[in-house]
Length: 190
Image 1 (cartoon, helix red, strand yellow):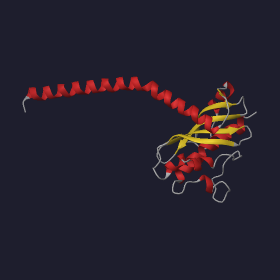
Image 2 (cartoon, rainbow, N blue to C red):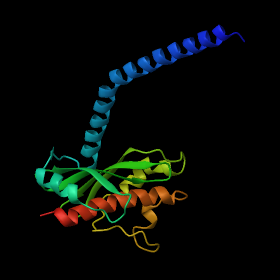
Image 3 (cartoon, rainbow, N blue to C red):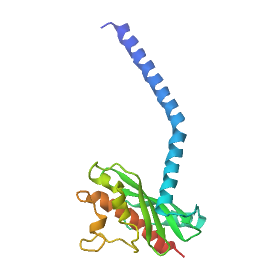
Image 4 (cartoon, rainbow, N blue to C red):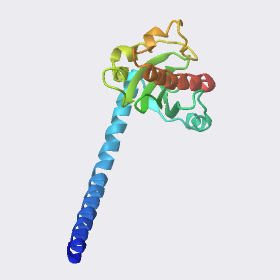
C-alpha cells in the first residue's frame, strides 16, 4: 500500500466518525425531552391506576424521610414517594433487581399498609417467564394485601399467588420492592 492511501483512508474514517458522532448527539438532544415527558406521563398514569380516584402531591416531609430511608433488602429502593389524597395514602416509584435488570414499579399503599395497586413501569425480564410480571392477574394479586411485610417463605398464604412459575428471581424482585414501600409506610405514616 502506498503511504498516502493509508493517510487518505484514515482521514475519511475520521470524517465519517465525527459526522456520525455529531448526528447522534443532535438526535439525542432532539429526543431527550420528549422521551422524559412520555416517561413522566406513563408514571402519572400508573399512579392513577395503583391508587384510583386520588389526587397526588409532593410532600416535603416524605421527600426528606425518603432521603434517610433504608430498605431491608440492599437492591430494593424507592425513587419517589407522593402523598395520595392529602395523606390518606402514598404512591411510590420503586425498583429492585430482577433477572434481566431493574424492575421499576408504581405501588399504591394506604396509611394502614394496605396495597391499593401495583403497576410495572419498566422491566427487561425474559419474555414468557419474568415478563409475566406485567400481567394484570399477577399485579392484581398484590391488591388488598394488608401487611407490614410480605412473606417470601413457602407455605405462607401470599406465597403462591405472588410467584410466577419459573421466574422466582422476578417474583422476588417485585416482592422486595413492595416490601420497601410497606416498610416506608410503617415508619412514616402518621
